[in-house]
Length: 312
Image 1 (spheres, rainbow, N blue to C red):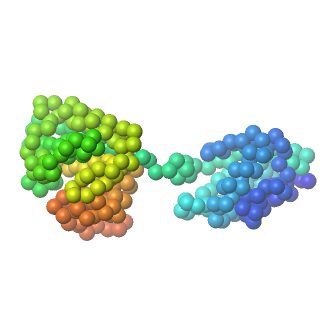
Image 2 (cartoon, rainbow, N blue to C red):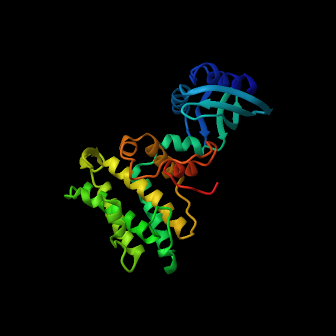
């Protein structure tokens, strides 16, 4: 069997047999190198192909070049749950009519992200807390009294409100008895949670926040909150919204750059637009949504949804 014929059966399996490779002449010692997975025998590769093939929506060989026993193909394919088309170069080496090795070359970042699943809320929360903590350490003395985007609050009041809110949510997760009156936004803004060293004080609050939500079972347990019963994951999600959005408020008031984590922005967008605990308790906590172009970056659309003006 010439190299082209052997390779033709390989791609026929991807195109028409959902990755079922039983009729493809793979050598027993077939080795494969790819950006997501690698294999050193044909049995393992065939098992992977059957699994991956079930998710393939379309598979096309765009160009193919043969040089002796080496066949190079440029391929396009679509697979669930990824949108769009993936493009790759694949090198297959054939010896005595059997495919002995393969190498797939493409940018697999999107596929890795999907395979890894969505980041855990606690991981996003930790990253957001770290970003805001770093921000607080950069604020100059004169900027603490500057106006923030939060109506009638200074930068320091906004930071106090954030620190106080995070502390209250952590206390709920610790099953501490929290007076509902303590959740009054103005009360927290007017309470000095930051002291003489705001960055250090905030770090102590966020350490407690992370300890509360990473405790075994904390995200699954139910807690009394605002006249309702919610899982710990919801409390952690509210903490993430507070951290990310008020971090932007603080940075904007202090005229500092603020680059929120992309995964955190995506998670907060989904929470802010679909989560009942946010949408049902929106009144008095967020300003009315502002108009924004649907093509605007997600962070801009998120902030506009929560009533905040941003630069395009």
